[in-house]
Length: 368
Ligand code: PEP
Ligand code: MN
Image 1 (cartoon, helix red, strand yellow):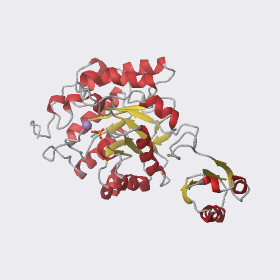
Image 2 (cartoon, protein in one colour):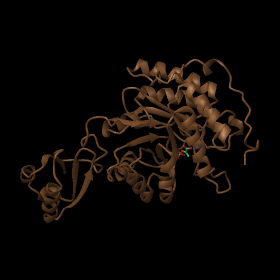
Image 3 (cartoon, protein in one colour):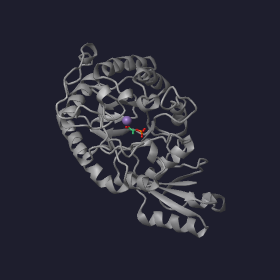
Image 4 (cartoon, helix red, strand yellow):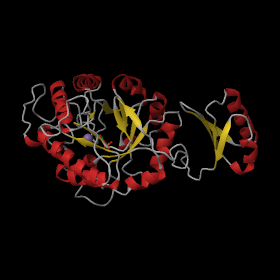
């Protein structure tokens, strides 16, 4: 059961509800939103007379919630959540495109690529500074140096930045630089991290665990939401199945499933889902057709020299063509890809027709 308070409800009204509920042996979990407080009643709600609660001061209405996740459920909030980040809208009618390298490898690499992604039609720059690698001997990311390059790339292009945070202790530092915090597949159920990003009040992209069910994923979103951080988006990035031709198996049905069960925006990651650039385009277009609110796609100037995930990274010119194709698919299903007409930067045609062959100057050629 959820008790939704009126927008003008006072603290003492909330305290009275909490006292009443606790005296019936139930626990409460107040969710203090920007506009109103919602009290999540945990336990056997049947022992509480709902008619009495409705009549208490400050109460708007009382709702039964049948799902184990509450704040993440559509029952709780029927209208779609829309998140605004640096002039970009996530979860609205038009789709958002996040693009950039798997790892930030250097200043020149990132800034060149940020311009190329933006010219191709991307709205948000992705890039990992802290990398969750399968092997401890693989490149682990540039750390804070990488965050500084991301902030510089934002200055240069005006694109907000998204980057992964793996350690609860690093959330404040990453928040100093990033516009969106990414929680990776391996950390979906890292509850200390979920609590830390929840407390940060920054927008969070929560990737689905490669072995996670939809219910587990939404329960993890609930952790973040339970701190009053309502700016959560979900990301389907492929799950483990018995197929070995692709890195993961893209669960396309997760998109309509999430749309039905939750109000949170759903973003598709065709790069990690497939692990091979050849399959990224088809998977991305399928995600658009299935109703995704956005895409996150890995792009690199020289994928064969990338320090991580080169095999699934698109070259900028191919990415530019893909954005055009995704736009056509979005329009076919009554949506569009957002355009950034005000800045005068985006023209949507440049890179699609010319190769991007500038050499990289600030990094060694070998993949460490
Ligand atoms: C990434 O985005 O580079 C990444 C490591 O993603 P995932 O957590 O989905 O593997
Ligand atoms: Mn990657």
